[in-house]
Image 1 (cartoon, rainbow, N blue to C red):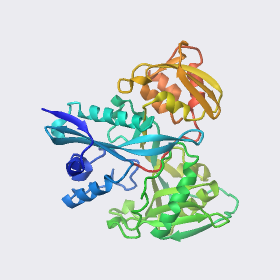
Image 2 (tube, rainbow, N blue to C red):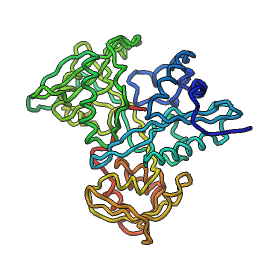
Image 3 (tube, rainbow, N blue to C red):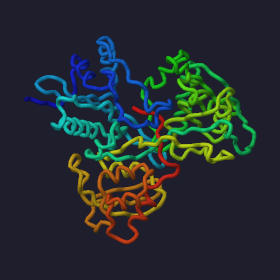
Image 4 (cartoon, one colour):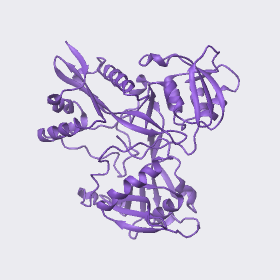
Length: 431
């Protein structure tokens, strides 16, 4: 059987899509409650299979997108596997950004699994990302047991929480100097990019939106879920600094009736954040507020007179990270302390240039990372370093799990001080 891994030609794009579950109306998330889904069911119902016309339309759109980089596995000329990367910028500690390859829509058809096609596609995507100057790859894992073998490891988390409206009193605070308005989709499309840009500048883990990211916002109902509604906050100068969209879906059971689902909410400052939640937590004829895909360290909890009123009902990893060029990526983020740390990487089979002993020197906003003959303070696996990169994971826990091996006294404490960030990293949308 002749096999090859390469980008699909334009005429092969329909076959490329047919290798992916979402194009066939099949599940594309493991059978566990999804923290990014606001409904009472574990995850949204599968889509209907795409028509031939839809596949052609997708192909015509995607091949014109410079940020879209597809790759496919072909066996005897037939497409049996598909994946792609999307080029993003991700905010890192210190407020800078790093070019990132976002791995998306990945699958091998059932009859051709366990033959190494996925590994070869992943290798091709890593090599292409490095050629484009992207030292970092990230993904949202549809199954938790697959991507660790390629060097990925969880770097951010997301939660879905519920709050009883009648227990949702907020602690006293100064009056809001701004204003709130109910908006339509056209206004929301204008406001979202501005608010997101302000938030992304300081939120570690946040991604640059791709062109057209908010184009599908609509005032039309989505089946029984009803239409999205939009709430905008403006500061005292009239500039938009916060926005939320939410829906009041029809409930199939009495237990789920009166639920308001906050699909997205972003605010550039605490006053806008509090003002938006103050309205959303007190809608007439509702009794429960649900918010999926939220940060694990949601500030709202600390604004409530009864913190227990907010209950985390689902939690999962969100972005998984993979350093493709570790020295370069490490010098692109900032560190809160000035220090030096020698570490060894020796397990990277897919990006072998990462292997070696490196000396990381930090001085606030600047850092260097170069090969060294110095004895290492510790040895890390590539997945462990990738998890630590955005600052949201515990060096102590990774060491306890055997992912980090210290060689000098205090090495784990030094690692923790260098890499940890506060607040935890978070990204607000999937890809």
